[in-house]
Image 1 (cartoon, helix red, strand yellow):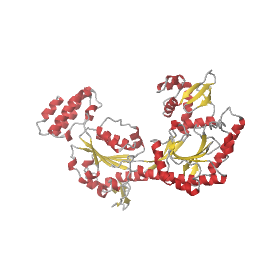
Image 2 (tube, rainbow, N blue to C red):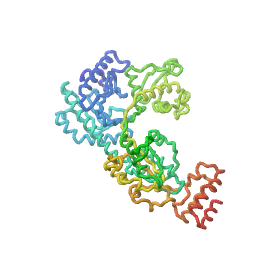
Image 3 (cartoon, rainbow, N blue to C red):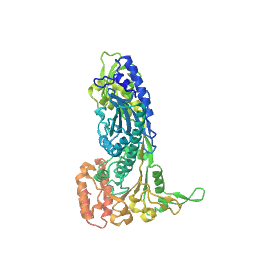
Image 4 (cartoon, rainbow, N blue to C red):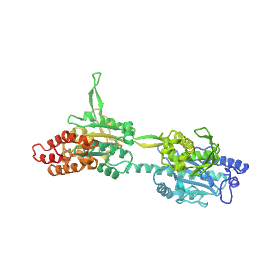
Length: 586
């Protein structure tokens, strides 16, 4: 590296790079361009075989921290690892070259905690690699600390912070290749172990077989949709079970559930006495040609889909902060195209700071400030297609001065939203599949599941396999398939259902929720169920769904033609029916 050239383009007083300052001397700007080319070439020369550079060009990649240093970035070469936010950076400043390893603001959870974990993983052998190569005598910081060279608003931390003041060019290349290769392997191993750990934690719920049971109308069918949505959102087991048992109202058109339906990752069937192994797993079926052929049942089909598509690539747009940084970098590199308002008036950017943009309309006397916080709100609205013109901004949750400057926020927000749409990242995500079995207790479980009753156990998923009797194919139940059953307790109590089913499923009881019924009927509803529990047991309570989404004018109809026949069945030959009908006013 040309350190002398670097010294020429900085202010020795505070270490700020001045080569990009528009008011700096022309020779500084030319020197800066030469230094950037030198650094980019150095970045490529020291890149080891297990890493590759990211977007190296004769452009300045500094994400706004332009005063102290500039940097380039590496990512791991491994098709099996697609982890957003994990990188290795190399940067140059007035006091030497720096290497950082860890995650960035792209990481959705606790970045500081995650980088502490990375550092602990790497630190076990970091001293050995430095000592072996004889580099340890140089200035090296190999401890977890907040990176003073990055703005605190990003809350970035370096898992490993290594600083080197340089020697001969040949030694520089040799040393850094070794260090970068070492860090690449360590980060790769960390991510592989992390991926394995995640599969056994809350993100993939350990209970794969669940039955929702209760009396008619308590929301079993309604809650299976909620259950599936919560599982797919990666909620913890305790959060999922608490939410389901609370039996609160849930919008069926939930975005998560609709996405699962659209991706055809859910199947729904109903068990009955005639339902068989041949319907569920596989069996011989007549074809239109007149031949008898083996045909896969619904369970085998969804198992195949889950097994073959357990991991898929999911393409997502970059986030607002990343797009803001890209636009800011273009400004500093003088690569920003002219910006115009909706009335075709040119807008001139005077300053582009971390949290504000000083911008002026060419026909205006004074410049104004566009704030990053409100700009993010505008951009989110653009991404959701909620605004079509500057006046639409007044409908957003922004400050009054933002509304008055809508003519400036609109074109800048539109530009950033386009950057987000044009720049995408690819992540590897696991797709869960769901088989919903309504009235699961009405089927002959031994007859339907056959030898697969053992394979649905959580501990045997994806590891145990059997040979199917018809096709002679090897078959196993994938770990990303959830079996969700519903069960009406008035048909058969849990104590009477198949023991094999009871042992392999987790049961969640659905209770009537009086908060969801028509308010005028709430007290009567509670009295009615109290009386039923006392007479014939809690399994025969009346569910709240009968009294939801109805008008007061429909209440008498529901009581007379839906609830009364149900009670007459429950109390057949029992004179105590008079008491419950009296509560209903019938």
